[in-house]
Length: 226
Image 1 (cartoon, rainbow, N blue to C red):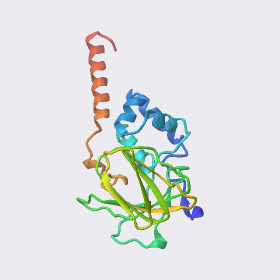
Image 2: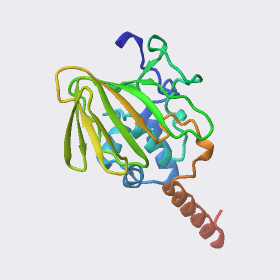
Image 3: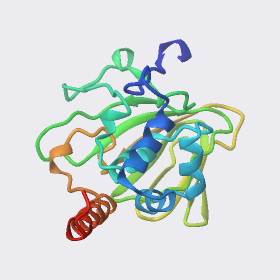
């Protein structure tokens, strides 16, 4: 499967590394690492590692960070579109976020009012995701292999045929604790594909940043600065 994976999915990858563009945007907004981390439900250390190119975020983490930065995820990742309600196994595109070892297959399509987003995740042996919390709910259903899902400190071992359904605002992470690949059917309500950007309100962190900018500009005008 590796030779069929689109590792060039990071939008604008020819211009600058993903981490550099995320850092540039953060600094342009005047946001600290902590503000981005808190808004995205991630750790400060993980955001710093992304910016320095030490690690690559998962799809959900990239969507969370993009929202905090006030940009659509398509600014950083080109994802396949699914226009039909049915997909065929041999026709689905396999893609990844840059050099991330997680490989995705998009299953769900998009239509007015849809709330479910579904994909297949191929997780290599030893892969461990970053702890994250975000809006919505999600389900893990293991198709092949086994994974461990940690949910607010509670460890859940899922083998083929097992599932886990939970609220996504609970801190969660997963890892493949085995020596074999795992395949997971993942369904969530978070708009991981960025299909409906027009319906999203600006993230509170972006709103606070804009308010600080307006306050600073007004202060300079009142002081006669240009």
